[in-house]
Amino acid sequence: NTNLELDLSVFPNPSNGQVTIQFGRDQLIGKQATIRLFNLIGEEIPIQENFSSKNKIFLDLENQASGIYFLSIELNGKMVNRKLILTD
Image 1 (cartoon, rainbow, N blue to C red):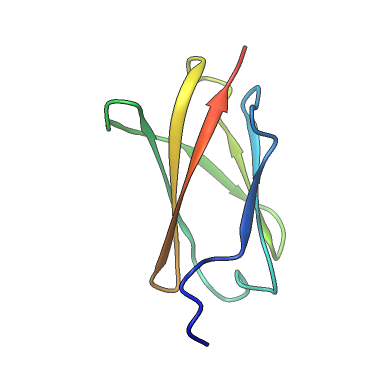
Image 2 (cartoon, one colour):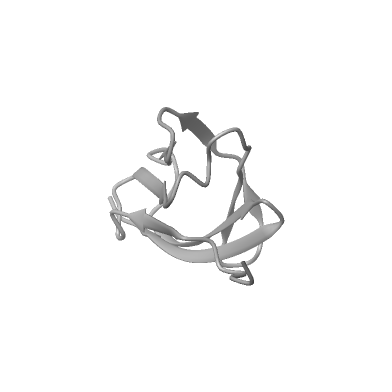
């Protein structure tokens, strides 16, 4: 498989702080994803990850200020970046 893109979606986006990252095709089973959150000036924001199903990761970002952020998601040596908008 030469597909270098991870099959995932981030929703809802914009979000009020409860964010779901959903992976396709059992990509998460037996594996650890690394999730990092950055603000617009590139500072990494500590996040709380809640792994609660075989293909979804739930993030609680309600303590973060409204604005534009970037999620960096790494799994199996592949990385995806997604823009995330947080609202009040």
